[in-house]
Amino acid sequence: MLFNSYAFIFLFLPVVLAGYFWLGRRSNLAPVVWLAAASLAFYSVSNWQFVALLLASIAFNYLIGYLLIAAKLAPAARFAVLAAGVAGDLVVLGIFKYAGFFAANLNALFATHFVVNILLPVGISFYTFTQIAFLVDAYRGNVARYALPHYALFVTYFPHLIAGPILHHKDMIPQFEREEAKHPDGHLILCGLIIFAIGLFKKTCLADGIQPLVSLAFGPNTPTFDQAWIGALAYTFQLYFDFSGYSDMAIGMSLMFGIFLPLNFNSPYKATSIIDFWRRWHMTLSQFLRDYLYIPLGGNRHGSLLRYTNLMVTMLLGGLWHGAAWTFVVWGALHGAYLCVNHAWSNFGPKIAPRLEGIANVAAFILTFLCVVIAWVFFRADSMTSALSVLSKMADPASIALGRGEIVYAAFIAIYAAIAWFAPNTQEIMGYDHKNRKVGENLEGKRLRPLYLYAAAAVLAFGILGIQQHSEFIYFRF
Image (tube, rainbow, N blue to C red):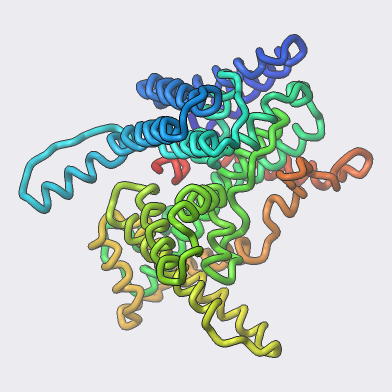
């Protein structure tokens, strides 16, 4: 089921909200069970064949977590349990996500004819990483013992299940346990509706609106210089507003239930370095890779050489996490190289004179954005050949068309760029503070401005009118 569908907006979400708050008057546990069951129903609409896999994953990881938390095991036995749990998760992820990729590469290397056609379960990357973090924290002694319904809801919670954010047990399960969250809060519902409306508008009007231009670079025809740049930039902003829209919608609908989700997107194209970019883009994935891969590998504790090696390994695996293709591996490798250069410049580069800081920041902003655009070409392309072809055209100004259509398209791109670079983001507009559980304080009580309501209603109306027959979020495929 899609967030940007009439069935979800006008049927599923209202029914689940009504049932959640109705049960909240009668019990503290029943709303949790209801929301977990609703999340499974949400998942089963388009992935019914993988519900059993999701339930098996929950049962397996809850059992491993129980052994790590409650069982009095020797240190060696605890490590063996953790290894078994993480290995089990990775084996399942590997079979469903990477078996075909592995077989294709074997066929290319050894002229074999392995045929592997396994359907990828939607959301498997997200709920697998969420549970691996839970197991590692349980091993470290940082997890309290949780009831199975709360753990099941933590994994299946439908606002995050399909495309993130990657949730953390310490943040989410205590919120599910709170009795106050199970009673309707008019302020949170209103703020959630406004944030949801903004996200829906980003998806259906902005992201879907620019999608046709992407084919100028990645379509069947060979692009000219300007068409290649227009297509690459169109995908850059399509992905931006698509992912930002999903993140807003997830936060908005979760607020209606009284639950604060972590920020996952914070105007990444305003970044002035690749380090800054990764603090703003897919923030929960960045935190996961840092806490459960980069730091355990040694982080920056063993000298510069190993630090850069750890960065490259982390980003290569981060790229492969996004998809089973060499294009994603190259995308990860590029960002790994970018980060190494960025850290080396920070440590060994010349100091910028104060009077030149403004110019340096502008130059850093432009360079960062161009590096991100180049990497997105590999992220979007169907093959390495396609990616290199697009990049070769982007580097060949001799093959320019610059017709009336290209001029209009370039102006269209400029509007998107202005929104991404200069407009306030959703959390700035709404004052969303996940850590302190605050939102919309400027809208509260008598200070509620009708202008906000009118603007939100207009944005919601345009978002609903922009709904297409079937327009998935790009991150669904990861």
